[in-house]
Structure formats: C-alpha cells, structure tokens
Amino acid sequence: MIERLAANFHYLAAVALFVIGFHTMLTHANLIKKIMGMNIMDTAIFLLFISSGYVHGGRAPIVDPGLVPGIVRYVNPLPSALILTGIVIAVSITAFALGLIVKLYQFYGTLDADEIAALRSRGL
Amino acid sequence: MDSRILRLTLRVVVPCIQLFGVYVVFNGHLSPGGAFAGGTIIGASLILQVLVGTYRVSQQAEDVSALVESASLGWYLLLGFVGLLAGRAFLSNAGVFPLGRPGKPFSSGMILAVSLGVGAKVASTMQTLFVGLIHGGAHDPGKE
Amino acid sequence: MTGRNLAALLTLAVVTFIMVLVVAEMPEFGSLDKPQDNELYQRVAYRVVEDTGAVNAIAGIILDYRAYDTLGEATVLLVAIMATLAALSAGSGRHDAGGPPHG
Image: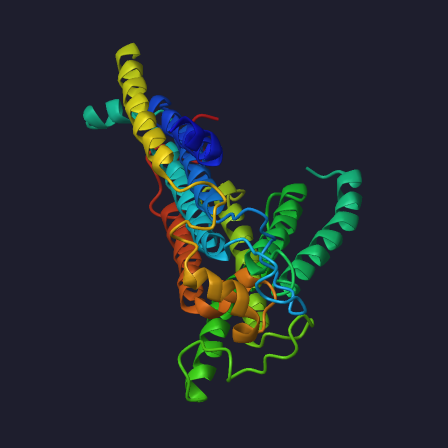
C-alpha cells in the first residue's frame, strides 16, 4: 500500500490541493476567499484527471504522421480534452459567482458570509 | 490612470501579445495550444488595454464585442449545418470539408474554421466579463 | 468560532483519510493497464490524423470527435456571460444612493 501511494504521489498532490481548497471554503467567511478555495479545488480535479492520462515514456499527443505507429507511445489525450471543458465551466462559474458577490456587496455592504447571515436573520 | 510611459509601452506590447494569440489559434491543430488558449491570450491583451486606459471601453468596442459573441456561435452552427447539407451528420468533418495534408497550416478542414470562431468568442467573452465585473453592472458609473 | 474550526478540521481529516485510501487503490501512475487506456485511447492516439486531419490529437478530439460537446461549451460561455451581466445590472441595491456604499 505504501509503495502504491509513493508511486501515485501525483494523485496525492491532487488530494492535498483538494483539501486545501476545501479548508479555505469551510473556514473563511469572506466570500472572495471562498471562491478562491473553489478554484483551488477545481485545480485539484484538473491535476487528477490529467495525471491519470500519463503513460510512462509517452510523448505529448502531437502525432507525427511520418513515424511508424506502435513504436512511439503517446500520452492519453482523452483526459486532457475532457478537462478543457472543465476549465471553461470553472471560468464560467467563477465569473457568475463574482458577479453575484458584487451585487451582495452593493446590497449588504459587506463580504462576510456570517455578517450577511446575521443581517438576513434580522430581516434586513 | 493616464501615464505616457504606460501608453507607449502598451503600444509596443499589445500587438505582440495579439500576434502571439492569433498564432496560437491558427496553429491549434498543429501544435500545443488551440482556440481556447489563443483566445485567452488575445483576451488578456484586451484586458490590458482596459487596465492601462481609463478602465472603460468605448461604446463601439462594446458593440463589436457583442457582435462577435453572437456571430462566432452562429458561425459554429453554420459549419455544423454544412455537414447536414452534404448529407452527413451534424458537425461532421471528414468527407465534407477537404482535410488537406496533415501537418500543413491549411489542413484539417472544419477544425481550423471552428478554431477561429471559438478563439474570437473566448477573447470577447473575457473582455466583456472583465469590464462588466469592474463596473459592477453600472453601465455609466461616471454619470452620477 | 473555534468549535466551528474544530468541526471543519475533523471533516477534512475524514475526507483526507478516505481520499488517501482511494489513491492507494488506484492503478499505478503511468502504467499502461489503467482502465482509461483502453482501445478508445489506442484508436484516438494512432488514427486521429487520418480521421480528422489534425496533427494535434487534442484539437482533433475537441473539435471533431466531440465537436457537439464544444458547441455546448461555447453555449455555456454565452450563457455565463449573459447570466453575469444580468445579475450585475439587476435592480439597484439599498445602499445605491450614488456609488458603492462603504467607500
């Protein structure tokens, strides 16, 4: 188990990034910092997927038509293509969340989630 | 912010960034990069212009951006319907568009054409989102 | 506040433990017998040039094999920008008596 963990240390880095982002989202009341934590979690997912497509001795999937197939080994391009979609979604979600945060600040005058909850519970 | 040094540096830097972005878009099917990466580079140069200038874009630039947003998606759909007209599936490439010789700049048929549209769309999306966010939705903040 | 931090740390410890266990069971990094390195990968990696004409396999995948998906992606960008601008320009807030409220 330990040697498998040592061989899979890229995935462990993704786990670390995910936990860092999750910690940021859980413990910070500032909404902008929550968005930053969400982006770090996104990055963890991207790292996990792209590193899962690696094969030992593989080249970047820029296929050279002159080379004989089967001799050159390419990295799996499917996770990379999948993650491109994920990056676009992450950008869209971030932009929309930032827009909502701008409106929240204009309405409540604060970025603190606890203060906003307190204001809302007092019916303001 | 209106500084002579910034404006002069901008005049040198922005065309270089945009040229590089166009290069990345045009070589999307040949080298690492592609429409999304190249469009982001061009969008970064547009954001740089907004940052160094008066934090505002002209009405004309906004109109162009909105046009590009819609036109690029329409261009994508149009290319998809070319496949239907040729009797193939929606958005099919091989057999509808000439594929050319692989490795040459003008090859791979639909991919290059779609790349141009997607790159323009990503660039204008980045500019519009940035300008919208720094103004907080107020269309003319200097009026009040 | 400290109670909440403690609860957060406990949650994170549990999540980390589960994830590390999952990583210990995952196929080895870089080996060729992973489940995602199946015949689809073999086909895409070696036939993408004659299928799509693109030398870059990723461009061939996202703009030819999965062009429909990329169309959806472009639509997502359009919807995101529409939603953001709509949320930003929706009705003026309470403190909106000329400029941002606190500075």
